Amino acid sequence: MSAELDPDAALMLRVKQGDSGAFAELVHKYRQPVMNVAYRMLGDATEAEDLAQNVFVQVHKSAHRYQVSSKFSTWLFTIARNLCLNEIRRRSRHPTSSLQAPHPDNEDQPLHQVEDAKTASPPETLLHGELEEKITQGLAALPENQRLAILLCRQDELSYEQIAKVLGCSVSATKSLIHRGRETLKRELKPYLRTGVWRESK
Amino acid sequence: MTHDPIYDRLRELSWRRELTSAEAAELQAWLAAHPEGREDWEAEAGLTEALGRLPDAPVASNFTARVLQAVERETAAKQRRRQRNWQFTGWLRWLPRTAVAMLVLGACLISYHRLYGPQYKELVQSVAAVSRVSSLPGAEILKDFDAIRVLNPTPAADEELLAVLK
Image (tube, rainbow over all chains, first blue to last red; front, side):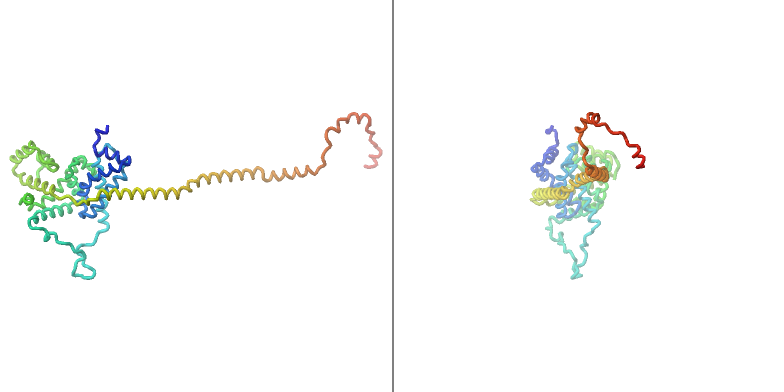
């Protein structure tokens, strides 16, 4: 019976019985994919890492509720989605200070000094860095459900059906979200995509 | 943007993976028949590749260790909460039993008082009254009653004296 099980499901069954080694294996396997989604959803590496850790803590706390019938990655990314959306909504209720806000002691100086990454980049990576920045900005500007759909689409472990389960909508609605998000990105990145700069950056 | 089912299907496949040679041939045939779709296809392919080249988010080398530590802290905190709850509610668990016992005891006392209180006093008084009466002779003295009666007949009543006394 266990040989037919998805390997992740087999590990989760061991986690349910208190096997911390099995849990560590799952964390190690999925930490990068979960971090990628969290980072692109929140836009901040530190917050993304905190959130990604919380995802796995939630997985451990909720292990008793895990059903073998559902794929572990679907369950995992559903937890990640919920925590990401909660954090985004929490931020919208408690917005952080603007980067343009003046320093209280010196109005000529901004409150937050951010290093200009463009000038610090070496010339040969300038175009690549600019494209990456544009895509990052484009993704960050998308509605959260379209952004999440596109990010989950990058996960090889998830089929369209599983992505739909994570998002809580139908497969056709999922594809529609991905399509609309991509159409927006194509419009914004048209100059780069037309010139093929993404090819030159190889 | 097209709504051609063949193009849509191949495009959706390309979002997840590289097209197989058969699928690529099908796409090329479609593009040959629909040259207006080539620009969109170029943009789709470019975007897919650009998204695929986004770097991974930085992950700390001790990420797994920190998750395990967080899980340990969470488990320990849960244990402490459980223990506090038990200590707080432990004696509370006896409260209903104590309340029931008190009710039963109270009911017994009330019943006892109602049944035996005033009547008991009356009984005590009656017994006290009876105890003041001199004790009656025992039955053994009556065993010769018939013989004594025959030997010592009772004299007739003095009717003249009774009449005077009236």
